[in-house]
Length: 291
Image (tube, rainbow, N blue to C red; front, side):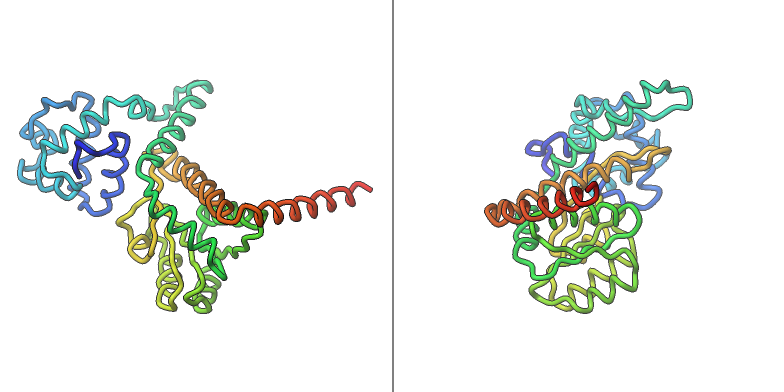
């Protein structure tokens, strides 16, 4: 990771995405660094090692696992990231917060997730995903819980412009769907953690059958991401009360809204015609209801 050419907004997200690669002890060292309000360009390697209770060699090893050349590059990138206005947005919720403070903190967390997700979004991967969805014969979406809700939201938008997609949130139905896909089809796995077994197994099966696969996740090194042809990553900073999921869902919805527009753009006239048809059908149904 070359800090000289890296978008500073992407420093925090890229470190968070690599956290699953670390051991629990290594992860605690990184958390120690981000908890230090005094961490700056002058913070020594010895100081971090002492604060975290590990050797200096281990700190250097961790920075390399995070994609940096060493501690000095890591220190420069993180110190600059910490000075960004967006880095100050994230504040932990407190039992003593007023309603105004709660609103402010929750909104700021979402704003940070959106800005940082935009900074790490791979435009080439985004275009590949749009091409796959546009040209696909069958489009099957797999997700569990909150991820299934995201899949339903985007499937609904696609249907409005005549792009049909099916959503599966049951492990058996996912596998049945994946077993029937082929080279002309597309399977998308939705999983915040990238560790949802039912989604991973279904994407694996779809890929073995020749289908093209896309992962929507928060971690580009996750098991789900490793099984996908294309990975689109969101990012969000976690908190004990809200976790990462709430803000990450907002970021993922924005990625998918952009993907929806990009797919519609590939045949804009057809999208316009289909949108008029679907909106006319819905309007007619509403009119009949009140007659």
